[in-house]
Image (cartoon, rainbow, N blue to C red; front, side, top):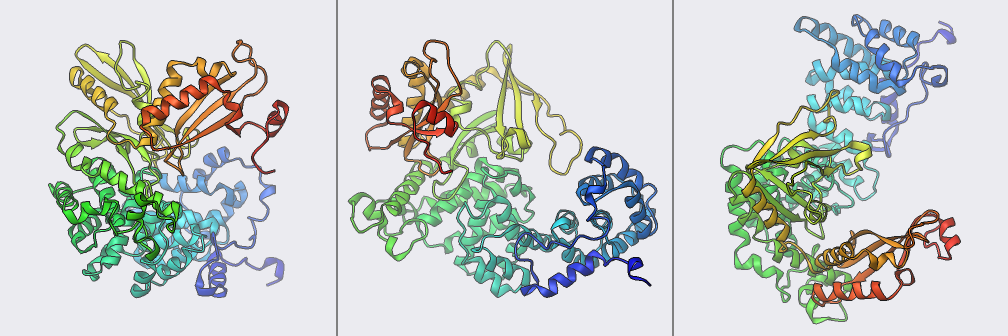
Length: 634
């Protein structure tokens, strides 16, 4: 056979070669990149748009060809390329596959995955295996999953056929941080001793391990089985609890916990063995975070056997009420801050003693976490957990040193959290948005309310909206709007209207609006400053400015951040040019929030805040035009 007629190498063979050549058989970062294969390197020659591909790909699959060569030819004639693989996945998912056709579809899928030479053709094979595959298909699907352009399709198949293998592929193809690579390598080997060693050693900070990564780590480690094999391993137990906290973190994607099939069993194991843990501030924070999830968070929505969730919650309540556990938040405690390095072991005492040899950041972190535990410690055991039917609103602040879901307004209907049940892309809004602005009050006119927004913004993955109206002696939530749910091509199922007794509803809204026990000092100061600026917009208007966000810093919750927009001519009603954004940082000075807020408002009234604020947005050109330094790099 002459060279021009030579058959191109199968993508599976190329992936095998790359795997053999790679240290430890794993790609270095985001997956293997294959050299352009015939039909894929000529992407510029195809004028097929994504919209057109969504139409022609289904035609190429009907009828489903009996051999791989026929499908390759059809795709080549239509101009279907690697960039159209999403259309391929949708088309295969929609194919009718009666029982009598499944053996033929399985045979074709194996031909395509083992011998296919283009990304679209191999994607068809992988998508078919997600529907008709068997355990024997896992090894070669795993290898194909290491190829960047095939990872998504391979994961769909592996999540059906072998969830652990899918988790490993996901981690290998998505985790590039050097701190996590030893763990990923151990998980890929499935060596139980190595997995246990790396699982308890890797840095698990919230910025490094989000909800999806934590779920995949738990799946790849077979965490539930690992815990069962090591019943007296407190270090592993603590890591299992921390992974659960990360998976349930609403600030990332609330739906991740619901995707973790072993979650109820791991919750039961961690809570059941919590007595093995040494009472420390870090362990107390972890167990309290689990309790918050079980009482009013996504954990409520798991598939629990009758009564088990309530039993676990009560057990946590009894444990954390013991003197040994409550004592860890005392300033004189030697439990240390999160991490408990020897140098930090006396941070509790140093937090109030002002010891000069203790790192100020370590002491501040200890104070924040201890204060959060003292404010929050009994809330999951006395609020939503004991509430009856109807509406209940719980304001939940997460662990300031370990939970990126800093603050959310959890809305419970008959004891079940509403937002994660309907919207898996982000947490409910903060009380400053839903309660301080009065958005949940039911007035004479219907009000459209956005209850939650996707963590990546509404413009990307959408938001959850509802209309609130009063109807005689009832308050009605209706006309729900939410985006398409994961794995679905059509619109999200309709949500029925919710009806509440108006008197009970109004009472619950007032109770939630006046509940301040969850708040820390700087947050209370920020809410008071915001309320003052809302009541008196002239305080900023006199300086040609208008209020922006007022809250606490994400990385520094002890500092109030007052943001405002400056536009010359605004006070006279004739704003000129684009606005420039300023931020004024107000550190907590230890005074009561009322005094700090009053002092901040006085200064805004008496001194132009542009002189002590810092430019934080706008453009470099506009800053120069108005005579202000641009604080950012080039």
